[in-house]
Image 1 (tube, rainbow, N blue to C red):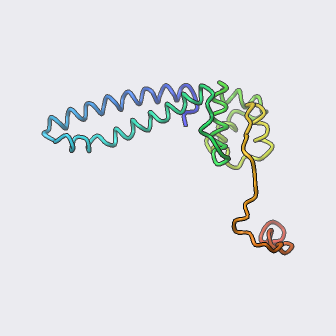
Image 2: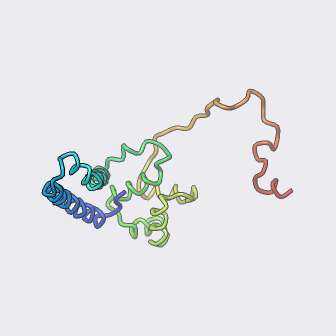
Image 3: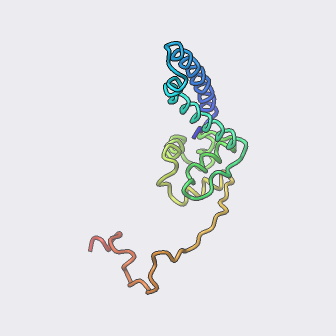
Length: 164
């Protein structure tokens, strides 16, 4: 995910370079006597790279406009937090100031897509970004037996019980 205006500008520049190189390669391979199909196969990696850059650019543009609708569940929470910062027009430093941590901490958290961040920090982030999640939790009966679990069986092997 593109996380800043600087990364966005670089992606736009990279896309221009890849598209230009694709055209140069097509011309070169055609000049070498390759068929259109062979030429197409030779430039396929460049076309794939251009498509990837276009996708990343479009996602950034949607996020920058405030559209976070692509983040539909908690599996994408880290990406949604980064996108919310981008949508709010905040730098990592500005977000760090809002939640009372050092900029390097926000940078690390974003690099890891907020994996391992505690509940309190998540609450602070969501409050600072004015971000809400409108999903809901529910229990599934899949895989559960109708019997009550025996005391201690759900926590076996966890914490102090493991050391005993």
